[in-house]
Amino acid sequence: MEASPGRNFSHASFVFSGFNGLQKHRQLLALPLCASYLVVLLGNGLLVLVVLRTESLKGPMYVLIAALCAVDLLAATAIVPKMLLGLLFDWNRISLASCLAQMFSTHFLSSLESTLLLAMALDRYLAVCQPLRYTEMVGASALSRLLLLALVRSGSIMATLVALAGSLRFCGSDVIRHCYCDHMALVNLACGSTERNMVAGLAVIVCFVGVDIPLIFFSYVKILDAALRAATASEDRRKAFHTCGTHLMVMMCFYLVGSVTFLSHNLNIAIPTNVNTLMGVAYILLPATINPVIYGVRTKEIRSGFLKLFSAKRVSAAGTTKT
Image (cartoon, rainbow, N blue to C red; front, side, top):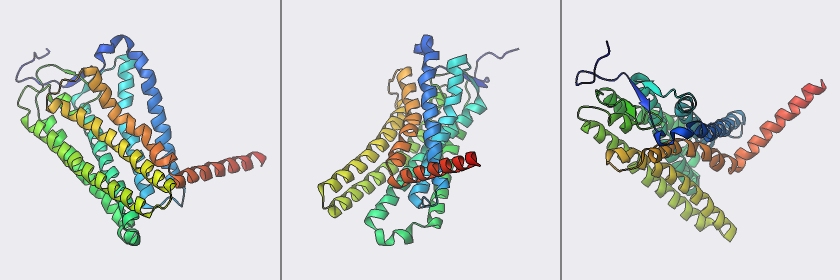
């Protein structure tokens, strides 16, 4: 006999309703989503392969770029397949355990991306502003410690956030107004006090956005200042402005969309469900689509590595055919 909702009852599964206002066009939404996911898989997968297979791309910056692309690929994979099943076949139900696992995956990977963006900015700062000490300060051991710190920092904070969400009871609605298991979208369904969860959510924003953004911005300002001081030609200055400006715009889009999405529930900002859901998807897919272009195609060494790798494969394939 099914238990009726009440204080002693807690839902064991939930239903996503992120694009509820576009119910008639749900299957059409699957087309751009699937196309975006394929682009993410191809772009990030190729870049990681090129960095791993090219001997000249073993420096810290290239390792960080490959790690960023791997994180983007995993973050998209954590939400898109389930979304596609929901859009195409109406398989929108998810168990509480799976919901918490997805919540941890998406928030852990997003926070890890923030840490990697900070690490990349600091790496460029040291390379440009402290070139004589760069090799001494940024070696393989330092990079390993940095990546370990990033994993521990993101893992411990997000594990606490998810544990607090998992301790709640859900005795009201079982409908999550999102297309994946966002932290506050689930917490808002709880029937008890959620004050601790809201405080934890705000603490996460302060920890990552409040710390990482100022450090990233400071690093790029110093990089730009050093580049302009060293640049003697207007073309060099234009290139410096263009590179730093592009990186900052991509990072600001990532942080701005993520912060609005995360804070809309905490601060009771009235955002339509479809808009909030779209922003949540863009927060994951937009950086994953753009990063391989910004940090891969536009990086001369990675572009050269890509051409060498695939020209070598063509030569190998042609030799095998002749044999």
